[in-house]
Amino acid sequence: MSDFSPAGDLLVDALQRYEKGKRNFPELGPVEERVLGTAFYDAIYYSVTDKLVQTEGGRRALLVFSDGEDNSSSHNMMEAIEAAQAADALIFALRYTEYGHRGETARNRYGTSVMARVARETGGAHFDAQKTDFPATFRQIGEELRSSYELAYHSSNVTKDGTFRKVTVRARRAGLAVRSKTGYFARVEGIASP
Image 1 (cartoon, helix red, strand yellow):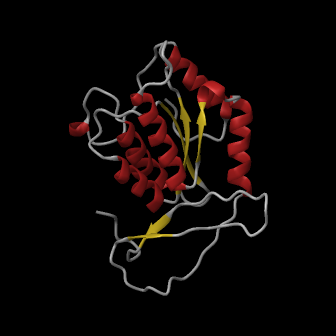
Image 2 (spheres, rainbow, N blue to C red):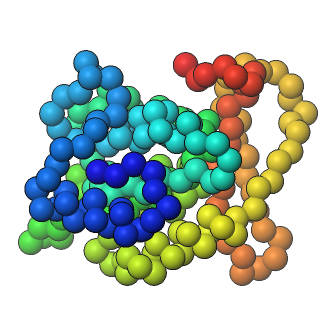
């Protein structure tokens, strides 16, 4: 509904237009791949590959509002996660889950686990939108993006074989929380992922 903007009021205005039924907005991804349904993984994949990779400098983050369910993507969960990891994009997942009279369903639990995994694997965070104070959550996300640290290291394994290599970051001091990507792909610079 809105392209990149440093102005929160423009984003809120676009969301309100959407809620009022004005849903004419540009779509991402190849036209021939679009089908009806929920394309959750494609939304992440194309937001990262078509939009975020074009940005220079600064932090890359994507806020995703969804129930985490997918029934029509041409990409799978791992391809979406890998695209975000390759672009150094953090995914902040704001989960909307509808509960029936019997509570959470197996489908809801699956969507919840998908949202949590996508956020965790990219170094972001996930939130239950029904229990979230949005202004406070957005402030928290903004503060995290402004105050995060970047760590780098040089691997002793110099083989550029395209494999995923796990990395674990832990804080030595008690009481500190660390969130980071779960690893990286050993690739030659400038070569896209398969």
